[in-house]
Image 1 (spheres, rainbow, N blue to C red):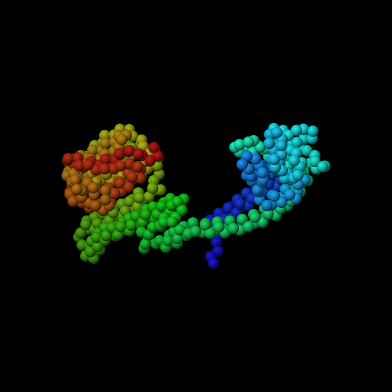
Image 2 (spheres, rainbow, N blue to C red):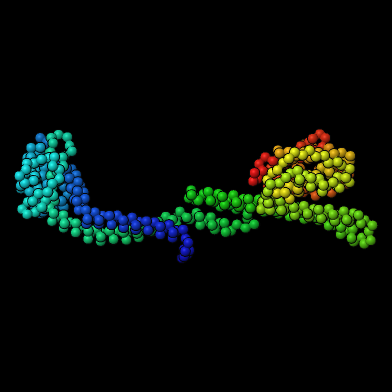
Length: 457
């Protein structure tokens, strides 16, 4: 038999419900005891009302609509017969004539020396040295008007109060214990049955591994309060599965991309004193850049790697153009800037990488002797070259990892790309809540970054 853990939800709910039942029963019992013991008038009034209803319902009338008999349960009938000095009833007409009574005395109940008064609904009187408490009720029925009088003696009330108190204590304690046992069993069974789908989901979750990461938790039979939790967990599993698949694809593609330059370098080295030193250095530079961009892509994919702050975009553009001025000069390309003051919330280092990659891409495809236009304003940033442009079918592929355009631009600067630079730009833009797009500028291509929803702004 499985032992329930100390923090079991079943145990907590069972304890809470049992405690609630115990407290409710205790409070009700205490209130009943206080009322019966310290407020006997309240108990007496309740007894009068309930007895009046029972007697009124048990009256039998003749054809002339006069009460002729009383039919009530045998216990109450026996009480009226045996305790005729302590329990009385009268059925009286408005003139004070007794039509039906529990004893042989045919007089209506009234204070000494006074006539019957139906307006006197509650009073006390002494009868043979016995104090009687009297209540008068009008019979609520069609036809002639009649009144019902009930009487209880003081000694009867005291005896019943004592009996009620002791009996109530014993009965209340017994009923409470029995109710707790029955209630606990029902609640335990109900909770176990309700939580069974949750236990099933927990077992299913425990068996989810990278080998079966597409498994999802079922919400069938799940309590409606837990369905949002299971749905959110399934969504989290889906995101993890997608992330795992992306990482696997990333590693496979990276291994494939690095395999070719490594094989070429190995072949060149195995030639011994090969004069192709320039090619070897170019391969090393290309592979180094590819490794660097792989690291950048991994860093840019994690939001916790960004440090947001107020950033002067004009300064970032100046730094990036200065950094790439030598590359542009070697490619015989001139960079023209049109800058308006712009301060936004961004990660300055990531923003520099984004702009540098856009400029390197523009230099790579810009014809010799042409220009690159860089425009900055409060709405966004654009980088345009005047090369061959991008075909309509290639626009959708530009920001894909490892995708390379089929067209070469500026001689040696139009080849050798890793296919990661623009993918890095996309990650950085998305991390800031911006959009990045590419357009055929005819001639050339224009990359546009729109500061639509800057993070932290």
